[in-house]
Image (cartoon, rainbow, N blue to C red; front, side):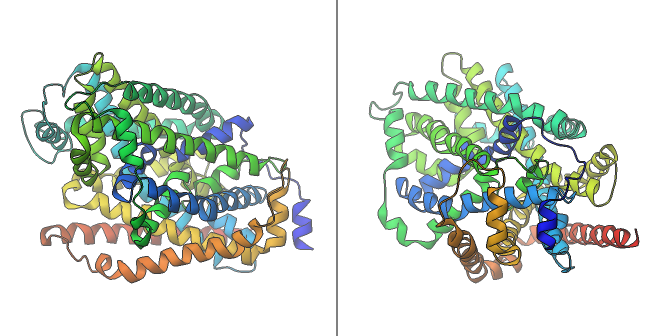
Length: 522
């Protein structure tokens, strides 16, 4: 009876998206980030090439898309209770269970932690887009000098390019306050308006870069063509399917690429109306993201690098990771081309826009929590968030060389994601119940999901996530927790980072406790 009453309840007065296209592009913008153009091709090269697509697509169908629909559904449902963040949304599933709001804490904690380092990386892209137009790094003829340019910019060394962290810090300030200004304007006037032009623009830039890369002529070896680069990337190695690490890598990529398990989609969906078609909207946003990742992401950086460095060189580049691919390899590839400065600018502008639409989405869950649960006006909520995060952002800025960024990435961008996603899948299928969940999913929908997705959402998706979590606990938990393999001089900085994260977690917990205590008093 309580659920029936809820389903017919009038919607609480909250800000709404102004158009269906706006929310689809906002969710797509949240998902389309640096991982689409950098992490995905690197993961594919490292994990069996074309074979990587097999566990990738299985993870997409059995985990990614179900989780996406779960978050759209729970978010829209929670929004009618006046909740826009995971603590309130989880508590609304069963108001008698006082623990649910604390379980939802990770849906605010995770995005904040990711934002702390993501915004700094995003600022590098803004800086490099300017450097490309000015020709600042064009005097670097090889990988060693280009890598030295990057380290100097990051403040990791003093060299002929940079004598201080000043330039990087300037671009960080510009990027940080740009994000806050967008969030300050609200959901429809800020996030939606930016995504309405930024997402189509970044897709157009991606298509332009893809066309330029695929028309490159061989430089060193006549067999090193862009088409051969694509063949190298997607050449299958079926023996890789026997390696569990390949399956874990594919599942991890799905988390990153769809922005599931973070809490962002929950928050965005909370600003929908009851009659919004979340099934089609979710599929449209996911399809846009997959186009950006599988089509564009695989057709730019790796094929371009293959033309200049060949099959052996590209393996070493992939081992160097996404940062080297973006900031070392691609500038070397693009600089000697006709209009090289322009295409270098397009490359970094593309990545910056992808980063911007993702970073603003990371801010919104915390701001929504402060608005809906702590009852702060939006402007004060944004200012409070900005002050706290501005201070905490200095951990990865000042201690980049000490491994702080990787530490934040693990706890915010890996561990929290898996735990949070597992929790919300169980809550959706077992606490809310599949009958109610299925009804809620199809409210306002123009399509009906195949009934096979009922057991998939209730059984397969949670089991899939539990296996991933158990695999990590058994294979990596001890070494990560005990800081095995970490240089002794870096241990104090990582311990300090963990203390900071625990204090952040405790602070959010106290805010949740105080907010619900005040509600009971009212």
